[in-house]
Length: 286
Image (cartoon, rainbow, N blue to C red; front, side):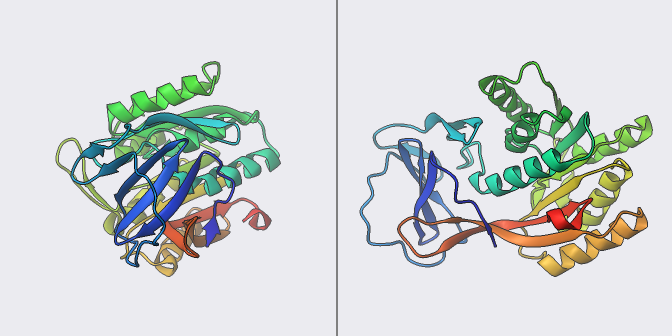
């Protein structure tokens, strides 16, 4: 399992009883976590805000900013229990940045699909070898949040395009345009509905998504990152599908799938947060 240990402004303090207690800067929040099926610890923790169908403010609401190394993010409580960031992804931000730094090429173009509020977008844009980051999300509000994070990180001079569009339609159009990317990040939901009611099921859509992404992967590509959360997608099944599509497009099958997680401060456990499949032009970078 890949684990992030370098956070200072964030930590999972406790987890259990299908809940988790987190610290964002100085704000302590408690919200649902279905994977935490064990018991909470006996440690007493004063909670500032909690989520149960809606946010309940005890002492202060969740509205702050946090930093991870040289990256900064705005944190807010949303209507669907989320906070605007998935801190476990820091382990992938670090890896992508290291691959970019080791790339033999400059002027890299990076594509972030299902980009949420732009954690991976900001991480890649910080690198000098990156010329452009294109950020795609179907929700305008999330792209506006991404733009706020871009400003917070003083990246206004970098070419970062935020586009509100269905990912599959965007990929098909980029193929017609002949545009390619050196790195592609994919963070698709397990299930969902598009703005026009179209159903999304990652088990059914995984292969079409990978195929469309590989269509626009540059011949000098350096990485692919795929996050999956469905219990119906094992590491083996993702690897099998990924390998099949890579072979079709004559890319080396340098892939590695591992769970990612966060340490729990008051328990000797790791909170599992899905799994990540990585591909790199150099298998030694995996």
